[in-house]
Length: 88
Image (tube, rainbow, N blue to C red; front, side):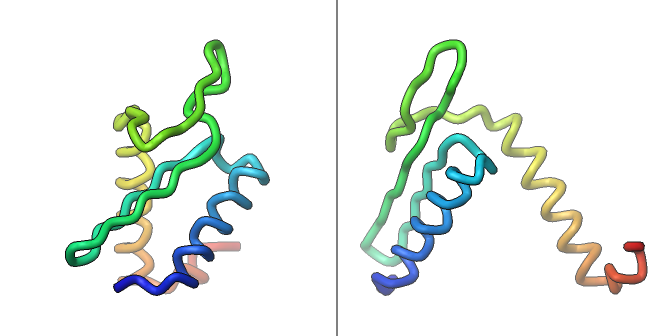
């Protein structure tokens, strides 16, 4: 069972990131054992045709793969090397 508090914390973090304009909207789905939780909020698109994010919003996976690939490579690099050695 996923405790209630971390779930609320996740939603608070996502909502704050939206307010800080990190991204316009989000959809999060977690499945644990026989239970599932879904959160969504914000805008899937702001222009030219604004639409809200719902649990059925389709996402452009091409944009997602850039983030997933870069994050994975950065994490693997960080695991093997001390990043402070490469940052001024």
